[in-house]
Length: 321
Image (cartoon, rainbow, N blue to C red; front, side, top):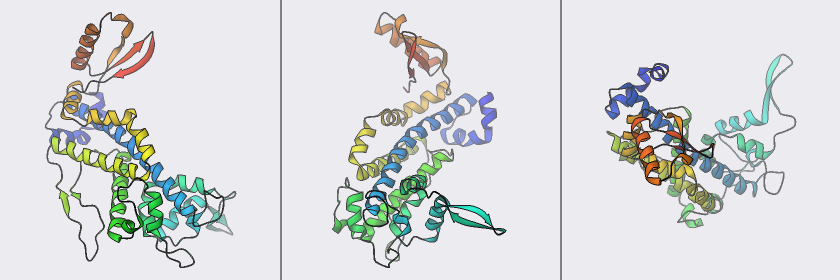
């Protein structure tokens, strides 16, 4: 297969070993399955990342910075760690050669707070929770702010967020979602995972322990994917119950549910990520029985097909059973 040659057999070797397949078509099909389920996960992570940055930005803007009443440059008035400061400066400044020396100078016009926040990576946000003081050396009241940032959390109260252990759990959840997002962005196998740790941060008085060992077979890999997905959705619900409901009603959620099954793995191994070139024209079938028979045949032989109605594209049929 030309696709296997382009991807390289070495890249597909993990699929062959872990899923126990020998044929190129099956290995490539599993690669396509990984791509499809990664896309569904990426959609959930995208919703979560947008909600995360907007919730933090709104709460911090209400207390720090100058500018509008809703969106302010709070990042310029808090004591960020050096790495976070560098991330901000890469957005607010540009490198210029002045008097023979390259220097970072403020951009003109200066980017708005909304522009700055929209360009910050997912990895910036967990460490916002490490900010303890503003530039005037006054402590941040994270407990109060987190009640605003996490309106959908089941234990949302000042007393709950006052406890460092609970803030550490939130840090770990955001960091977990960030790592998952980066894995997908770097085109790594999303089903491949190491040990799952308890959510928290290692402290002198508290250690992080292994909650689950690394998946050793396809069924365990699917279970781990479900745990990861549930953690993403739970964080989204904490941040915005309304946006969570919008996501749950959308196509990506149902897509993940259909793909994260042994039946889906078997289907992708069988059809190898291929589709029938000829589309299915709904107008050509006088009964539902004949249409279902045709679609079942496509699932066995081709794996997917474009569905048309009245000559116009309507959907893509991808059976997973």
